Image (cartoon, rainbow, N blue to C red; front, side, top):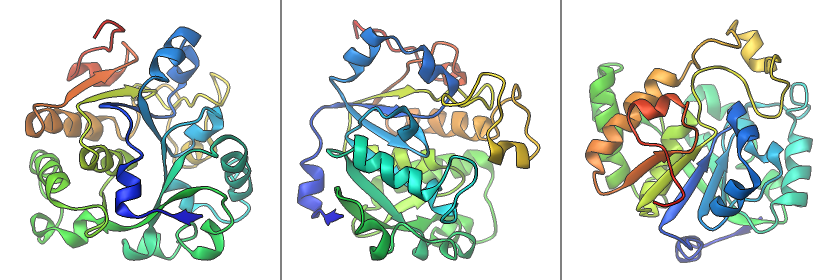
Length: 266
């Protein structure tokens, strides 16, 4: 992978609006007209959104790091590498260096190693991961209350430089995504495929559970396990970054408890 400088990375921003693509089942409901409209804006994907094979401007490689070489089911390193090479040639990769994170992740560290990312004919950055629990004073006596945790994370988004301090991680990848889009100073943010009301994923059949979800005994139709945390985080983000407009593409998303639905005439 061709390493980008901080200046080159910042130059990848082309719009004041960014679309954050999750992997919820509602990705299947996006119409071609909506795809065309969203394509006018910057975009960032993470986790297994790449199964859509729809290009984005930025892509975070983080959660895929926990998979061994052969992966589980169809979530393998080989599939990820093949899809990146075939469909994401113009995408800027953001590789999370898990070796700097908590021991539970650093021992599984793969993609930040040069022998892996050097195989990817793309350009991007490898940034160290700053795990909140071992990095911030608020966590010195264990996990703070959720309300304090949400606000603290948002304030740290403003203070921690991606290239000097690293990218922040706490409970889910959305934290890291929000840190990245804060650093890039987007004025409007659209969440697509961030449904939270169930555990369905867009690349699977409507009644099919993801392997990792099944192993953790989570049910298909129950609220996503990160739902309450994500909603609280978005609520705090609205307060701390009052000048940034947040929208949900899916009108049924649980995010609409805190933010409005995106309309094409905005």
